[in-house]
Length: 209
Ligand SMILES: Cc1cc2nc3c(=O)[nH]c(=O)nc-3n(C[C@H](O)[C@H](O)[C@H](O)COP(=O)(O)O)c2cc1C
Image 1 (cartoon, rainbow, N blue to C red):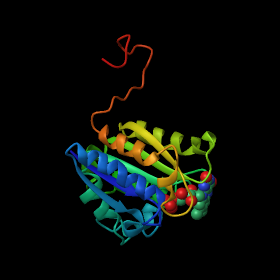
Image 2 (image 1 turned 30 degrees about the horizontal axis):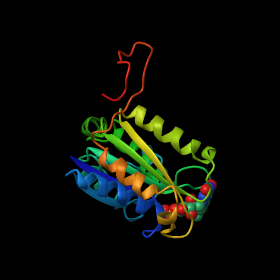
Image 3 (image 1 turned 45 degrees about the vertical axis):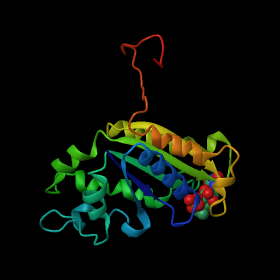
Image 4 (image 1 turned 60 degrees about the vertical axis):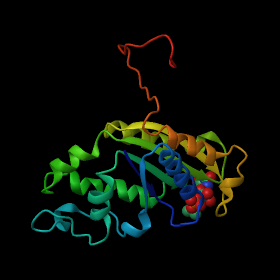
């Protein structure tokens, strides 16, 4: 299986990227193929008005690396690892723009939309976040948004790890050892148990056999 981490921090030596790398190391330890992309390298502009932005053939006219990232890296991946610093109690803008611009490729105006729809769904998803603050509520916005995104895309959200840190790399000194948690999340990326019950869900009395 293939796992792709999308790192949203502009700091390539920052904390959230370290967490993403730890998830990938965990996945690689189970024999999976892993890759990391920095969104700041690929995504240069926000969503525009598709009606005026699309080219005559329906393609997006924003000439940055988004299309290549989406078609060559995101769609072929079996799992995505979304890595973001906590910015103003939400995800970093670079990740929000990445998500917003999926719109251009999912709408019927884009000639390959059926293929994108088919290949974007059904992935495994992991989320890693670094934040300066520790209180649980600071993460509610991020967790809620990405859980909803996972639901919409029929992705399985395997887990969320938050590391507490501010200056570059200090996530390694967080006593909760989020790097180890992230590594563990990576080892479970494809095998981990994910549940989301409804009243009629058939289930055993125990979770772990
Ligand atoms: C624009 C901006 C907004 C931030 N907002 C928050 C915040 O709301 N809460 C918080 O705990 N930390 C906040 N921080 C601190 C970062 O989340 C923290 O430094 C994080 O470790 C940075 O991750 P990185 O090293 O991957 O870039 C903010 C930092 C910046 C630059």
